[in-house]
Image (tube, rainbow, N blue to C red; front, side):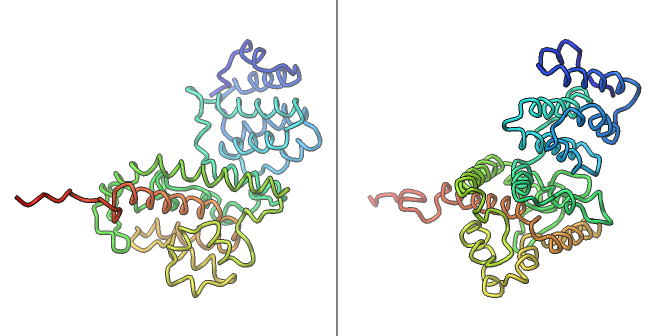
Length: 324
């Protein structure tokens, strides 16, 4: 699995010759055998890191666990701090090239949800090192920032869907007695609207954060959680129902997870996964932000669908027939 790109493409794509030579060296070394994430990370650090500014090198040095995800996040982090550094912009693009073109066809670059990228970027603004706390210490293969494609829940082990949306899973959460296939089909129909709502919320909050000169409480707060939820995540706040009255700053994360991320009804393996994720988020509350955003988008999109279907709007339902 070498670097599947020819020298002409590299020369046409990159104007900085140091970056061009760095990629050519990576290509030569990579041709010797399979390129694992650890090898790709080593090559990037060896041939691209020395080209970066002091600020850029600091970004490289934050990367620890080798994975294709972490290499993609490195690209995003470099791009984030390279606004006025054209050379660092090219280095970031080179990292992206190594990530994508060590596989044929190229590795998909869109697999990381936008809310996870935004979350990591804004933690960077606030000097919070997400990668240091992201993975449970004794379960480094479990990622609390990984989500079902159709909602906010943790996907089942080795799958892309959660127990609620997996079409072959027998889970019947709460009062939802529909068959698994029906829940899956509904989730697929809702997916586009879910993504639109998430993007809308993100756009509004990112603008607000930057307009406030990074002072706005965009991420999950330590204090006055109830007010933050009511303002920033109103659909999730409504979903808490009577539990709103029991919510305090101290128990907020535990209470929210007990409602949004309850493993009841799942298999033993999946239940263990959910409990590990929940315990880790309780230990690091800032990590709940992407889950809350996806849950808010899901509940808001469900409300929008309900309004489109009619419900109690004037004129809804079958027209009455005139008596003859």
